[in-house]
Length: 171
Image (cartoon, rainbow, N blue to C red; front, side, top):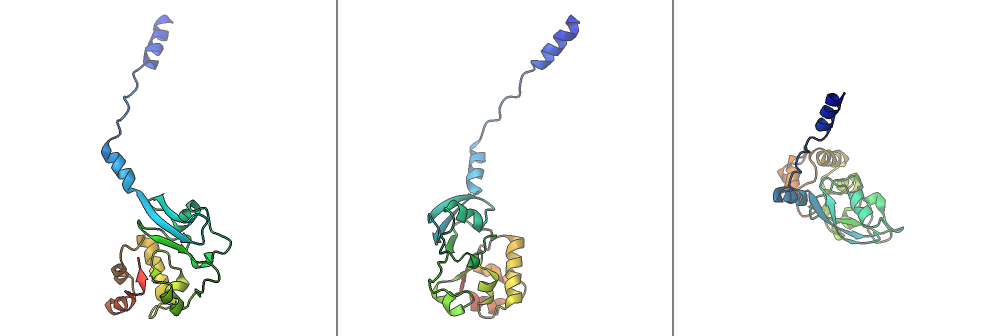
């Protein structure tokens, strides 16, 4: 009994594996997995926010304290993935921006490919509902657009259409 007890005691006191030191590479990789986005418009706390890679527009709005009662949330694609350096604009009701109007879209700035809704894309010249859905599908499958030129990879958008849209859209 003593021999059996001493074996169990020595087995239980086996030295633990030494802790793995954190390297500078691990810290750098963690920093690269962060995004910085600018949230503006009808939110409680507009500003710059750090979010984990793979975050969605809804995550950014949550970090900004949520939307105000005057926000036109239906114009924002909450499920859209966000890219580093992106600005997320939440329009206010009565700000003069009419959903689906290309004239209003041009006056308020470019349509952001990474946050645009089907209706906003459909309002672009030469882009109908089918092509707008293809843009959304491409964004869902490949992640955020890195550049406007990436639109060329979307079925139905060739060089001529891309040239037409370059001044009207942003990543």
